[in-house]
Image (cartoon, rainbow, N blue to C red; front, top):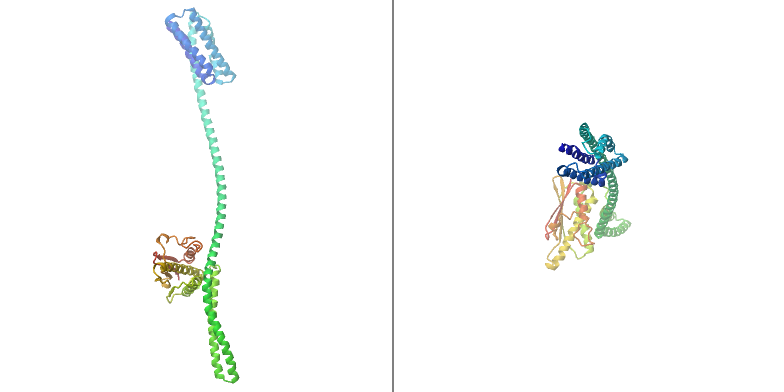
Amino acid sequence: MEFVWFLNGSFLLQIFIFTVLRFLRTAKYHPLLNKIMLVVNTAYIALSIYRFYFEGHTSEVLFIISVTFRLILLLGLIVILVLDLIKKRTMAMLFMIAILPFLCIFVYTSTSEPWGVIPQVWVNAMVVWAVVVMSWTLFNRFKYLQQENARVALEKERLAREKEEERNELIARQNEMLEQQVAARTAELEQSLAELKQTQNQLIQSEKMASLGELTAGIAHEIQNPLNFVNNFSDVSVELVQELKEELEKGDIEEANAIADDVAQNLEKIAHHGRRADGIVKGMLQHSRTSSGQKEPTDINILADEYLRLAYHGLRAKDKSFNAELITNFAEGIPKINAMPQDIGRVLLNLFTNAFYATQEKSKQSQSQFSGSYKPTVEVSTQLVGNTARIVVKDNGIGIPDAIKDKILQPFFTTKPTGEGTGLGLSLSYDIVVKAHGGTITIVSSEGLGAEFIITLPV
């Protein structure tokens, strides 16, 4: 009977207190009250064990202390429930309704000596009711936890969705910003490209005018020769006309006819050299103006010979001490090729100018190292190879080092000192031959042994 009293009274009450505290989550919502309730309940457990084993349950002092602990626990539960009801916690309200009968019995048993004056049926009913209440509260607690977990899951899903929306919005803003930056950068690059093309065109035109300047002295020399012939034959023709008049006055028709034949020959020579001068001037104008892009039948032998001499005399005008042997080896029977003569002439002029520059530099080196035994030589030859016409420009100058062979056709690359070259000559030559005419440029050179440029053009 003593064991049943301890089990039904103290033990169930203590389990009930712990269950209520855990169910109402007082550790979270009322941490201070939770600590007080746990301390009092623990003390109550210790007192109950002491009464059962040592003093018995008949001691009035221990009974009063036990009742005090019960009242404190009851008061603590009431305070917790009231606070939860004020805060409108649903679980506290339901729990209050469920344990109301049990509280009534608890009040009664807390203020009277237990089990002696309470019918056994009440004791059994209290035990059954406690089990039912605990089961019911646990069921509702489980249901509440399920709902709470579902709410937390929905909240997480909502937060994840909001985070995803924020991330998508951020990505959209970043994409828009990047698109604006790309558009601005593209506009800047297009502007820079336009300015670069404009600058490149200006440099190309400057290169053309520079090559025209190189031609000036050569052109003057080439024009001077036919002009000398024109002047000489004109003077002679004036004298012959005077003699013709005299013979006609004398009536010597035979002598007059002979003089007239001489005048006619002189006029023919004057016309020939006039056409020669006219051709030189037209060639100069063709070289100076921008290419029309229209191809026309072109005799590469005449073109190569003309620009070889123009380049040579142009260099001679700047350095009268320079002399070089000019060798031409033009193949016969090469048909006229379909090309832009002013552009091909510009290529040849650049190659000849570079060849004379290389031989001039080696001549300067030879004067200091080999006592002037070096003889500058520039050779140009043409060949018909299959369906292509080949132009070979060869010199015995300083040559091209292997390290820069792959670079000399690049824009703005030059081996000349600063101020003497733009680095566009060979680059423009490559564009003219390869891109505009579908030909090739091949370089064969060894440092110190001269260079050979081979141009092939489709016939």
